[in-house]
Structure formats: C-alpha cells, structure tokens
Amino acid sequence: MSTTRGWSTELEGLRGIASLWVLIGHISLLVNCHIKLISSPGIGVDLFILLSGYLMAKNYIERREKEPWTATSTIRKFWTRRFFRIAPLYYLLLVIALAGGHWFGEMRDIIAHYYPGTATETSRYADRSLANILTHFSFVYGVLPAYSFNTVLPDWSIGLEMQFYVLFPFIMLITLRFGYGPTLIALMALCCVGRFVFADYYEAFPMPSLILIKLNIFLSGMLLAEAVRNRKILYVALALLGPVASVVIGLEAIKLQVVMEVAMILGMAAILWQHPPHSATASLVRLPRKLLNNPLSTWLGDVSYSVYLLHLLIVIPAIGLMLHYHGLSNHSALARFAIISAIAVPVVYLLATLLYHFVEKPGVKLGKRMLASPERMQRQPG
Image (cartoon, rainbow, N blue to C red; front, side, top):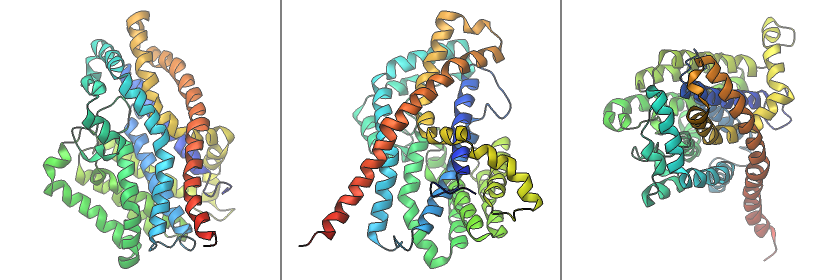
C-alpha cells in the first residue's frame, strides 16, 4: 500500500470517484435521465463523508506524539489546517455564486420548465441579504434551516464538514476518557435520540446539513480508521452501525443509499486492510487497488474538492442554454445525458485543475505559513 503522501493513495482515488459520482449524478437528474445508482449523487457525498472521518482520525492519531490531543495548540493547528484547506476555494466560488445568483436561477427555471420534476425554489440563488452572506462566510449556515441550502453551490455539505471539524478534536478528547469504540457508538446513539427529541429541528433542513443528521457516517469512517490501524474486524462491524443509524434517523433512509453505505464501508475496509501478500483476499483487492493508485485516479483525487464545489456553476448553465437555444429536449434521455456530459465534464475538470493549482494549493501553503510564524517567534531569543 503506497503511502507517499502520508496516507494510502487509494483514498485519493476514492475521493476522485466520489466527486465524479456527484457530478454525473447531478447531470443525470437535471436532464431527467434516471440511471440506477448513477442518479444518486447523495451516495457520492456519503463516500466523501466516510473518507473525511477516516482521514481525520488516521492523521490525528498518527500525529499524537508530536501534537498531543490535550494541548490547546493541537486544536488550533487542526482548525487552522482545515480552514485553509476548505475556505479559500469556497469563498471564491461563493462570491461568484452570489454575484450571479439571478442568472443561475433563470437557468434553473428553464430546466424546471422542461422537466418540472427537477424544480427547486430558485429565489434562494438570488438571496444577497446580509444574513445570507454573513451566515455563509462564517460557515454557521449549516445549522440554520433557512440558510442551509441557499446558494447555487452544493455547499450544504461544506457547512456540514465544518461542523465536523469543530467537534472532531473534542470527540478525540472524549475517547481518551471513555475509549474509542464506546465513545463513537454513544455519539451515534445520541444522534438517533436527537432525531426524536428534536424532530421538528431535524425535519426543518431541506438537505442534511446539520451534523446530527450525518455524524453517524463520519463516525463510521473514524471506526474504519481504527479497524485498519489495529487490524480489528470488530471495528468494521461497529462501523456498520452507521448505516443502521441512518435508518433510525430516517431523513435520508433511501433503501439504495443505506445499502450503498454498507457496501462502501465493507469495500473501504477490504481495500485499505493490510492483507497477507499471497492470500486470496489480497488477490481480490489487487485490481481495485491498482485502479485506485494509477495517475489518473490520483489526479481525480487531487481535483475532487474543486470539481465538487464548482460543478453546478457549469452544469446548470450548460443544460439551461442547451434546452433554450439548441433543442436539447428533442433528444432521448440518454442522449441528453451524453451531450451534457460531453460538454460539461471536460470544462469542469479543466477549471478544477486550474483552481487546484492556483487557489487550493496556495491556500494550504498560506495555512502552513501561518502555523509556522508563531513557532518561529517562539524560537527567537527574547
């Protein structure tokens, strides 16, 4: 298993698959071409969430000697790294989404005119109120139902991710007191209880942007990290309680999605597990590992965040303009899907590559410089 980047490079390939899944899933839905599995972009988001939980836990545990969990500086460093990984690209595309909100809304209305089943409340795209702007720039929109799904971006999940980042260091501190497995299972149970105690609050969210709705999947990823690290099948079994919690929470308990959560957990465990070299299991996962480790998969993983956050800014206008000016609706469903994919996918990936190199990477470097500056100041003689 390659670890040249500090983590299993298979994870990069899986991130690439997740972003591509969301991209083509949204294309298929918006052109009214329903393809089993593909037309479920929420499954791709769940894969992102699993990977996030896995990576956060893996990296935090591996750094614990250098960065003790009980040190305030560790939490500060963690939050700084995560902010500069997420925020620069998000802020750039958020400005574009807010500035062009009226036009994106018009394009979305054109799509809804041809395919009423795809309709959404497009006035939310054009909301330039101070409250909408402030809640989005501060990332608190994810816990506010009225603002949680209020731009053209798929940023409901970015607010969700930020909530996880806020909670994560404290979750790890609690595991020191009560144990890793018991803590994470207890938190899953609390999310399930919350579904009934705060039913109206849970149900007020148009998308599952509230951490209590999706924390169970992050926790499954964290349990998988422990399973792979210590080679303990028990933790794989515990990770499968995440999909069980999805059924209990029930807001997104689509049968296919829950089945796929189980499949993704088992698949990740099989691929990331250190199998004896000549065992039957090693032979079974050899091809998937090879596919996930090739340069194309690595590139897909590199640009996955940009692809995810950018894609609707390209896909929605592409479909709206093709419907309005070029008779896209005259084609069959599969032909519409193929035409828009051929137009939008290359553009999304080209722009995402540029954003990765000129926005994401500089943002990460800026975060590292900010972390390095206080350390240099501390080392200077008084």
